[in-house]
Image (cartoon, rainbow, N blue to C red):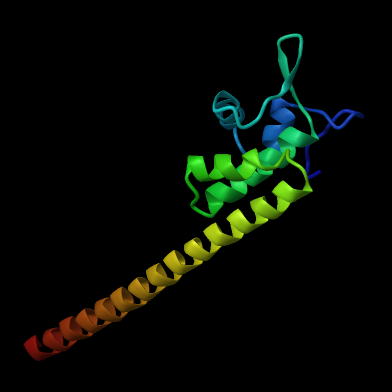
Length: 133
């Protein structure tokens, strides 16, 4: 684990898991409210296990990839299934990653065009300033 302390039974407090994952405790509570994680309780304290941690890692990866909450829910929902659902989970994720890749490539092309246009306009401005001197 990176920097967080856990107890001897692979259980984390809300603060420990938040610190380990680099998120806020509010983030963990949000995903709990959404039904994507379900920590146990020790009195009034939330206690997260390896399942919750793995699910949160999937959630955060999905967010980084630009997936919507329903898409993340679908991927995470397959986490607890049998090996056959792992195949489905991987195929679903692979399909979505293909879509994300195409979108990012299109954005990259758009940015390259915009950068070229900005560079051209800046050059025109410099030339015009030179003419005015």
